[in-house]
Every structure is written in structure tokens, then in C-alpha cells.
Picture 1 (cartoon, rainbow, N blue to C red):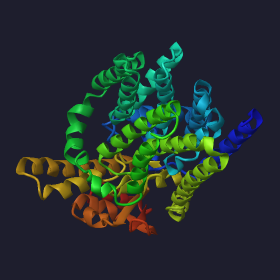
Picture 2 (spheres, one colour):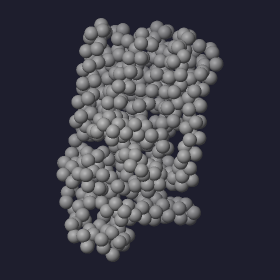
Picture 3 (cartoon, rainbow, N blue to C red):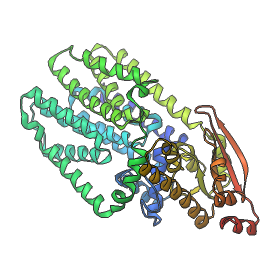
Length: 486
């Protein structure tokens, strides 16, 4: 592919990425983390005023774009998209420069960064896919027994370290690559390359910083996560129910297929496949089965197939790219239509304060940001109460006592947020869990909700979700009485 044609494709891909970001919203995780970062910038204290289940790196990653939005204006979502587009351009150009075999597929590599993530655009797995390619190119240089430049070693170590900081599970991908390089070259010192030492140093520095700055994460939040969140996993068999099974089977078959072909091509692609396998295992070990956890594996697999087929003609590469990217764009558009009518109604109330009586993050987010509302609840949902109530029945006496206390504290936090922030709106889940019933079991919360009346109702076919928006009545005296549970 000549220079002009390659950059024409690059411009088209960037344009498509910009258009997608303008007409869609980030997924639930990204929307919530942006909201938490905005809260921190406004003075809220993480893990005290904002209940986030992840270590602070997940929030810290979003602070720069929130700062850009507050300084220069515009939505933080657009600054996040702009940042990732620029990083994607830099990574794709750098990878093509360092590894000549991928140069003619540079536009497809860029598309795997900007279009293929679809609804997962901006997720931590999306960023890690970008970071992983820097480490992969460094691994290929070591595999071919070349002397990589110092800047690439340092950058590869930083990218590897950041990936591990984001989620320790991701270390599996880099461990697999290091083992593969050492076994293939017969040089065991590849296991202790400078980039791995840099990554380890960054990870240890981060852990020490978290311990010093946020001891509350270990003393208060960790026991709660241990009892409620980390145990809420699904089995591997349950994960395989749906699209993940054929994708993982295809990944395994791809590894077997790679043993065909010339030695140089085979080993380089097998190295990428080892990284993808590490990411796949990391997704499985997280135990959630969420599709976006497998994004790094999918992004690498698409490029492996394209690289392997590139010698057989452009039509094969085009077929692979077209199939993967069409699915991703469809994913973005289908998710963008969820809650659209409800978001339109909420936007008319902007920037009203809102709290959520829901069981899952994806019910309030990105809906709240689509409606441009001010989320004043410390938690994205009443997940603490729901998990505690669900686990209490089969728990032993000491564990049951802790679960009851978690649920009591969650109710107390909701009451405190209602009294302090006086929200105009309450988002109430009615199905699959009826939070109107949950509220009635607490006299104070029940009294508070008499201040509100249901104004909108949305039914989402996928998942059988029914949400209602309750709007505060205008009678000030009644509202004062409700706030104090009278």
C-alpha cells in the first residue's frame, strides 16, 4: 500500500471514529469512572464520598480528560475520545515503523484501535490493547534477536507496568510473551529483561502509593469487596453461554493454524497469539464473563488473522477486517439506542441532581450522563444491599452479621445522600428487582419517596429491565418533612 493510499485510509478511519463518538456514548464503566473523576475534582474524597470498587488507578486515568473538559469546555467524553484517537495514531505509526511486516496493514491496525472496540471504546481493556502493542513490538525485536533502542525498552516497560497497574490480571499476557521469547531464543535472561524490571518497579511503586494515600481501601473497602463483589463470579461453563464460546474456540484453532507457514512469520504471530492467550486467561480469571474483558484478545486475534492472510491477497484481509469492524460498529449503534427515550426526558431536567435505586451500574450509566444530570449518589447502584441480601441466607452466623451490617450501612448512606443533596430526581428500578418494595422496608426511605412521583417509565426488552424516573414534588414543606423521614 503506497503512502497516499495508506494515509487516505487513515483519514477515513479517524473520521469514522469521530462520527461514532459524536453519536454514541461510552459504556457504563467509562461513564461512571468519568463521573467519579469529576466528583474528585470537585473535592469529593475517593472511597469515602464516592464508593468505587476498583483501586484508584482506574479513576486516576480519567482525571486528565476531566481536567481538560473543565479548563477548555466540552464533555469529558469527547476529550477522552480525542485523547484515545491521538494515542491510537501514535501507537499504530510507531508499531508500523518498528515492525516492517505490519506496515502495509497499518490502517487496519488503527481500525482495530478506533472502530473495533465498538461500545467498549474508552474501557480500560481498550487502553491496554494499545499499550500491549508497544510491548509486543519490543518482544518481537527480542524474538528476532535484534538490539531494541533504549527508548523502546523504557516505553515498553512503562506500557507493561501501566497495564499491570490497571488490572494485575493483565500481567499474564506479558509473562506468556516473556516465556515464549526465552523458550524460542534459548535465552533465559529474556525473562528478566529491563522492560520487565521497569514494569515491576512501577507496579510496586503504585501499590505503595495506594497503601499510603488510600489506606481506607484496604481497611474498609477490601473486606466489603471480599464478602460481596469478588465472590460474585460465574463459572467457566456459564461464561461459554453465548458468543464467547465460538470466539475462544476460534482463538484456540488460530493457535494451531499458526504452526503452518514460514518460521519467521510463524514465530512473530505466535508471540502475538501468546499475548492474546494471556489476556483471554486474565478475562476468565476475573470470573465475570463480560464481553469487554475479552477485547484485548479479540483485537490481537483480528490482526493475527489479517497478517497471516496478507500474503494471500487483499481480498482475504478485507473480508476479515470488514466482518470484525461491521460487528463493532453495529455493537456501538445498538447500545446507543438503549434508554434513548428516557435520556431525552431526563435532558429536559438538566442539570438536576439525581440518585439511583437500581441494582446494576448499567441502569444508571451512561443514562445519567446522556441526560446531562448531576449524579449525587455516592454509589452507582444499591449493589451492596442486593448482594448482601442475596448472600445472607446461606452464610454462617459471623458472615451473616457482616452482610446485615453492609446492607444497613448502604441504606444509611442513601438516606444521608438524600438529606445532604436533596435530589430532584430518583431513578427507580422496577424490574427485574422492584426497588419500590426495597424502599418500603425502611420507614425513613419510604417517607422520603412520598416526596416524589413517577413521571416516566422505560421498558428495555434486553434483560427485561423496567426503570422509572421519580420527580420531586414542588411542595417545600412536604419535602422538608420527607427529608427527615417524618
